Length: 262
Length: 97
Image (cartoon, rainbow over all chains, first blue to last red; front, side):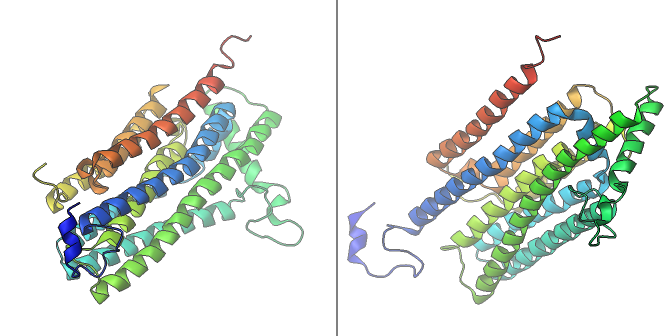
């Protein structure tokens, strides 16, 4: 703000000339990052709204689909992602305090936890592949030129059996044709499941790339108490991806769990 | 506004354990039959967790008013999207049959 600053030519090498001070530069960058994150909210928000509408329309199918995914792995992944958010927050704090060693350590910790998350997600995806639950029933175990899962629809058949089983336990009888129709509608649930968790996992992969870049720059000693904006913004991105999962977990994994199996 | 800088490791630990506690709580409550309240409780816990992450991990509590207002606008937009869409779909079958 003060005009006297123009008299000195010495300033931090990371300060761009359109800014008066490092604090102003970081404020502008943080604001810009938040505007980007709001566009991300618009993208995920549309998906969440569509998911909720279909969940109301095909509730029974969404219950059947939801109880077929592993709540234990989803729960474990939520804890892993929360822990990674904690290490990320600690990385930002270390950068702010000028502690290069802890900064590098916490960034590596965040990347390890991110990799664990993606590994668990991959295991869950493989289970769905194995059970022939991938929508379209073409890609799945025993996939071949003649259709693999599409032959006899084992995935849908198993879901239909389970729907009838649960109904029997509740003392209601569900005809096979109606159970099969509900089983077919679970493809809508699985489409949302793969689209939303897939888009989330894609963000995680981008986040891992960002972390790699931040790690290299941190090791080089680019950041200190005066300048750590990239770490701060990388942190905002990572926490945002965490928030998306905080909503995905209850919405996808926890529909009517008290009625179904673990 | 004396303490303008970031919160320290102690607060981050507290937030982390609170988030882990809420995660365990939402998982445990999901297996109890609360009827219509099940999804409401699950989403209330999710919102609490998200607010904790935004305020403390993302430092919004310590940021300037412009950033706070902008973020609030973004989430308010999301609220409009979800509530107006659902109030339509949830009420369509109310006056039939």
